[in-house]
Length: 189
Image 1: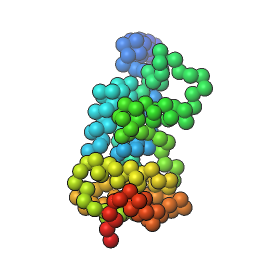
Image 2: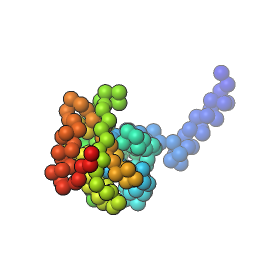
Image 3: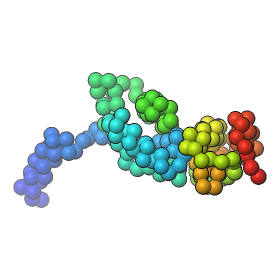
Image 4: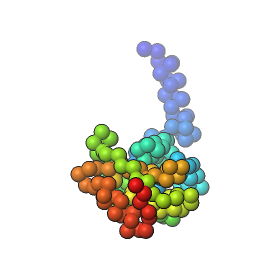
């Protein structure tokens, strides 16, 4: 054991922590990201956090799973830095979801990640009418993403296809198509 080396390491840690380079209370958590209906939305989400919610940083976005890993200091997410004593992972997820939803005017929200393993999800591809407008793509996505049993969804403008990964025990193709038709979206065969 080399005491001078250990002492130097201790001093470096103390200096870094006082400079803000090391943050003991920094956390990362992974959430399902609603609103991530096409790849370009990853940039939109990053820009949202940078401009409107600097307390949150994106550590990673997984478009294929509709998941985002966020980095944050817990105290920075609450007024005056006071973390409620009764905070739970569920309450924190709800707080983050509401914060992101309000700052994005409802176009993004985080919720708990899917509990259903990917190998138990069924993929459903539905061809629909022309999706040349980003707003139309978002609207079609919203119809599908909000259905109970839809684990994640995306829209492909080039092929005019909505793809949903579903829990077959909760929903099916017919329910997805019925929801689209109810909203006046043409389902093609």
